[in-house]
Amino acid sequence: MPVKPPKIIARFAPSPTGFLHVGSLRTALYNYIFAKKNNGLFYLRVEDTDQSRKVEGAKENLLKILAFFNLNWDNKPIMIQSERLDLYKKYAQQLIDENKAYYCFCSEERLGESKAIRQRQKLPTGYDGQCRNLSAEEIKNNLGAGRSYVIRFKMPKTGLTEFIDLIRGQVSFDNKILDDQIILKSNGWPTYHLASVIDDHEMEISHVIRGEDWLPSTPKHILLYQAFGWEPPIFAHLPLLLNPDHSKLSKRQGDVAVEDFLKNGYLPEALLNFILLLGWNPGTNQEIFDLQSMIEAFSLEKINKAGAVFDLNKLDWLNGEYIRKKSAEELAKLCQPYYAEAGLKTDLKNLKAIVATEQSRIKKLSEIVSATEFFFKAPDYDPQLLIWKKLNAKETAKNLAALAEELEKIKEKEWTEKFIEAEIKKFIEGNKQGMGDYLWPMRAALSGRKASPGPFEIAGVLGREETLKRLEKAIEILK
Image (cartoon, rainbow, N blue to C red; front, side, top):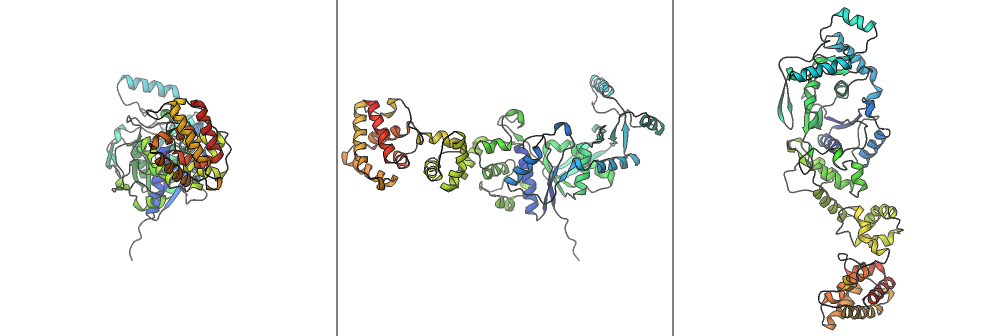
């Protein structure tokens, strides 16, 4: 009877320390689509053992964001580390009992002095092992006296710790440079290293896909797995996200929170598509992926080792592509909050026509208000804007007056972009003059801008009365 392959289980294990970083969203995405590609499971775990960095409401915000992107987890309820403290203590004690860990009673002052001495001697600044070989009596006396302690893991001092990384290949660490890591803090809470290893084992995680910055921690984790007699998962470390100057993309260098991108008018599907391509290449010319096509195309083998540059121009382009695909009604609904924030009252019917004029041009939803505000209030502008090329003010006023006269002939029920365009073009051609002599001042009079939608498009949305009123204003300005 053939042996069934082990179940693929991947996980996303963020800390509730604030807003969700775009790099963390990429980690969640890669774990999710890898699991689904392999008919596996995607688990969520909240790593909140560092209570000093915990931010109120961050966990709830995290769950909301993941659900918003349809990165739905399979474990219900999710695992929360702060609810498992007794378990971590039990496992730490097991390592103590098996002489694989030890009590460390060193004070902060002693540790600081030791570090300074080792720095002066140009030695590694890790823990010097002062408490590694305390006698049973010394340990008993210290515990009896109520001295504060941490529990440290006994790292091997010789040999190599090696593993195969699915992205980086063979990785090797010299054990002599590894510090005797703290696994249980003086307050009884575990460190990341102990808690994550225990949790990954208990959740039966088959693959740990995480950022490259966790690579130096991996030998510590593998040695803990070995100490417990557990099979370690398979590791894959993702390339760093970089600024255009190739420095690491961090919270200190601009808005990198997922919520900021959404607030600034990026569509979730566009942001997810962009993040997919940060370090991963499909090997084809395809650049647009929905979640299902991501699952179908994804493989860890196509992830690059080199850091991925976070190119906002590429994100803008992608977002624009997704905006173009929206129906007029969808786009109007998405834009409504931006108009509301600007204090502009809108109804969906009028808004559909207004946003349609900019659908082919805007790159972000947040651009829609400034691009279309002239529809809501008559613009102020320099009279010089109305004048086309070699025309003067008098000639421009004359052309606008002729246009207004022609537009007045169009009845309210006929007032549509296509009908206006057909009638006005026929009129201009009949006058044997250039289109720009009439259409530039018409567009400028209606929008008050050098760059805007075409004059017929604007007139169709503004309506007959407002169009004629703006043309009359322009004629007066020129006079």
